[in-house]
Image (tube, rainbow, N blue to C red; front, side):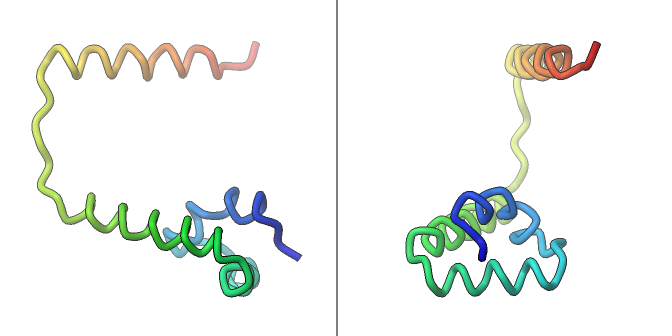
Length: 81
């Protein structure tokens, strides 16, 4: 039986429609039985659709530099020794 924690781990693949069909069926059963997870899935899906429909906006050089610095720092922290 799929738990809410399991559902959250699979949410990205579920929304991208790239999870195993058996996992997808378990998720859909869970969503029918769990109103909280249904709201999470529905809200996330709607949010993604809103962003997909938006036109890309240019980033300032300052913001782009700051963002790249954060990404690079995060990547350095994830490297295994």
